[in-house]
Image (cartoon, rainbow, N blue to C red):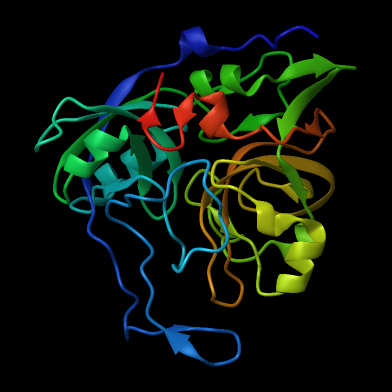
Length: 293
């Protein structure tokens, strides 16, 4: 089972930066349940202290909860898109202002903002408005032996940490679970290099029946018949591998979000179930104390 060869020596490393965001409450305050009830819940953006990569994706009293620290650059659309399109999962980040200046973390996701996890003590010192620099590395990542496999948000560090091997001429990828394409919801219309796609998790009985309600933030996910080359669509025989990056939602058509990592339509990707296929384990993140490696 040889390790696949990569083009990583040809990839450019470049610095981008973002500012720690403040939490956002949905306009009009209320978030609607499918039955018409409404509520106000915490969720997106800012610094989240007690939700970490490796924690559960379901069961929080929150909506679209994001683990770690949420950063962005809204001042200029070019800088915003550079931060989003160049940053890859597993990239290193460093705090460059504020009380936690010098602390180092790891990019763990991309939602409407870039998500970074730091050691617990550093994260307690990080405040909205602090600047975070990301050392981007991974845009343009390829496997020369598998030209039909396209990678999204994949850093070399993450690729090597996942334990992907070659078996019978296919990439064999460990994943925590497989999702049926019929439950994929909001986000299909977006570029698969930019932001995530949500699950339709409103049918709680189905979530329990399929075991999806056991999903954890940071889980590696497989979806058959999902072509994520230029958006997210159905294509017979395609396979996409993704990452769970935010928590569940009470809104119809929304649920835990999955971020595309790799996709193919020619059968080059296969997968097997491994309960430990989570980036909290693969990138040596500690559930309670942030970044170990």
